[in-house]
Length: 132
Image (cartoon, rainbow, N blue to C red; front, top):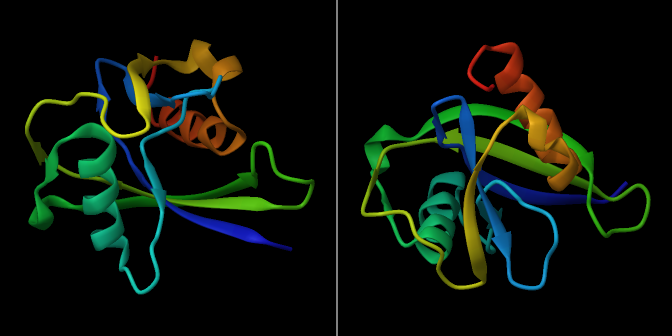
């Protein structure tokens, strides 16, 4: 079984999770992306979030949340995405950058517009009482 290895940045506020929509895509995704060859989780997180949201992750605040797996959207059956999730403080103002077209705060009622792995992450935060 093939696995797509991704890193994700979890930012919650007022019972919602920060999500992004890339240009040309219909679904929203938790920000982050694929690790480049030789990158650590921390390096990939810092690079991806600067590229996508134009903010600098504060390195010593990075905290592991969990790892979630689900069928990869748009891939053939059996291709899984493995999303390793972190939260962290950041410097700057969140704004769409690079391939990101839109930033939106989503809640548990938005499951129909997110990926399968994001649904598992939303459920995790809902069960913890951190998502409306």
